[in-house]
Length: 226
Image (cartoon, rainbow, N blue to C red; front, top):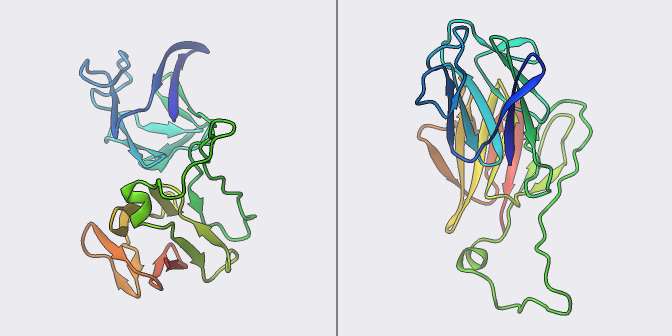
């Protein structure tokens, strides 16, 4: 999971593990992360956890929120990013335990990232019985998405996580969530809504069926679920 290391003038003040869906940051004492400094607004920013990803959003603060020296409104945090609020520097670190795979981001010309999956270690000499699947495991077999256009065309990614985020942070991001009865597609970030089979998403989420074509941030992907 991700953690935040807060420092002032190179001295680490506190470390905070991100465990909640929403973590607030500001000068007021009721925030999850309190930074008692006049350069920091009462309610300065909020961190939102979507699956394994963490977004930071500036709450119209007086002095702004910066990531790696650049002012942001809302942005997906990456490992080693430095958030600057006033004179405080907050480094975002991800525990690279292999428990989560990275967000699949479509960038033209980018090399295909390696996607790791989590395997449960069994005790030596023990084998998991074949019929010992939980209800969710038995109901939903892993689906995959296949990229149809652009530099990444032909790439297929198995949806091993409960929530997989796709798209371009800051432009358009959507999520595919595995549920006991199938998969659902949801809008996460961006002014334009993603579309399924050419129809823009209207509600919060829509169920996905085998062969559905998703389009977001100029990339078309086909949902495959046998």
